[in-house]
Image (cartoon, rainbow, N blue to C red; front, side):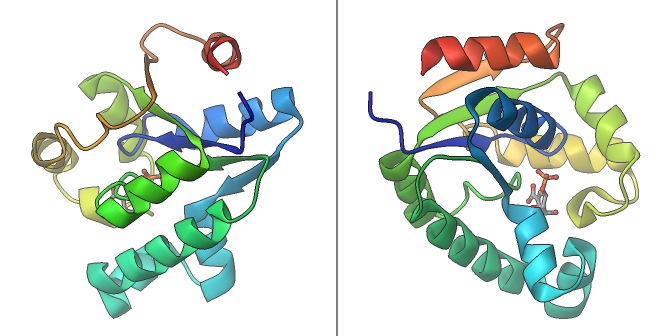
Length: 166
Ligand code: S3P
């Protein structure tokens, strides 16, 4: 298969950035984290964008970043958990890349996002917020070409699985 890009999708805390970085090293491809890229270009944090401009403004920046990034080839791209919400972006991911969804247990997700203040949608009562958002996004990642349940797997094992699938 002539691979253009690998796109990692999944809920916040599912391991997209960690796996993406390791996978890019394995493949010798460039690593792009769309949230990090947005922060670099906007000279601010995701939290500040949500606070000062609102979620809709962030989604617009995110869509633009995804479409612009996917215009290029040979990259491992890790996306934000809500990057799958716009159909146009989902289509773009599928046509320009091999889409991999990462899943992790509720406990794992909660423990990871609890440590991070730069996740505005799951601040406060983290457990309740994560549960509610997960419920709303139940099937949001189903369009992936491959889904990997990361439970009990090391980063190396996850990367091995991806490599086998490519
Ligand atoms: C979001 C997830 C975040 C970030 C933003 C919104 C979401 O990325 O894009 O806070 O809607 O799920 P991570 O999945 O890296 O936490």
